[in-house]
Length: 348
Image (tube, rainbow, N blue to C red; front, side, top):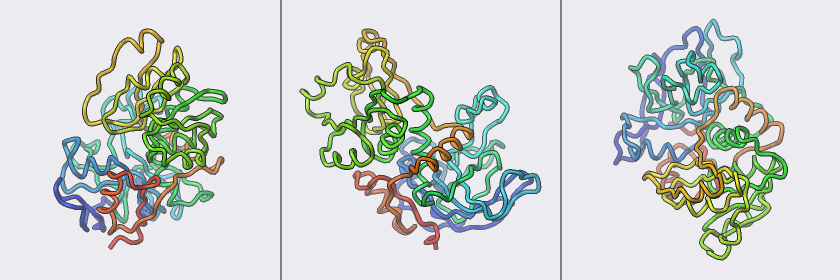
């Protein structure tokens, strides 16, 4: 075992604080990574504060990781010391079920291992995430990161990027499609960038007119205020796709009516309480209400390569590790454009 520096939540009520954690020595198929940047996802806050239940303390969040390879196991063939790499939302799976064999490790039938607060495949150890100086990950779940993009801005691609890229690819969003993005936050701003790069005509649906200029800068063709009933009525049966990124409680029915016949609304945000959905907007328009998780390892690598080729990365605010508790409060207040990323060289 190797003792490394980290920041941890010790209980749901306490702010995160410096902590020491143990990392395993690299096995034959393992890659040890010195973490350079770690993105801050809303899931980190949910976990640190036990808002979804089941948090095991001390908890070390962080699943948007970019770093450099420092050691490799003797059987590692895809990476060498010094490579720039990434680690996303999960670090292992059973690797033999139908979904794993189809490169859908995120839907592992036996349960994938998330990067933090998750049982390892041995069902004993609980994972500790990217708010730490180093991490050790099995080679299969490590990703190549291009140096073409600013590495701090790449970190959120490992969650926000792949969470939005995966449904766009799965439902074959293409040039000429009319697509709406609900919410212009960490997920929403990536949805706008990616969908517009694929040729879709993107409309941002938002409660705040303050974000209109940003929406245009990110690639949206239109911006509509959702609190305006007349505007919403005028958008009925307009969109082929809706990407809903909002994690707060809201009315799905309001947006389903905006889909064309056979349109698809994809839920990416996870409100804490169940939402009522009327059958009529679905039945009368043969519309679909679906959900999507992150992508598998193969698709995540595809996304990283696509972003490098098209010069796409996240809009971020770089912070010091000591600013993490302030960053949590600002995230909850919507005061971030559009993702906080921790400079891990400031970890002390």
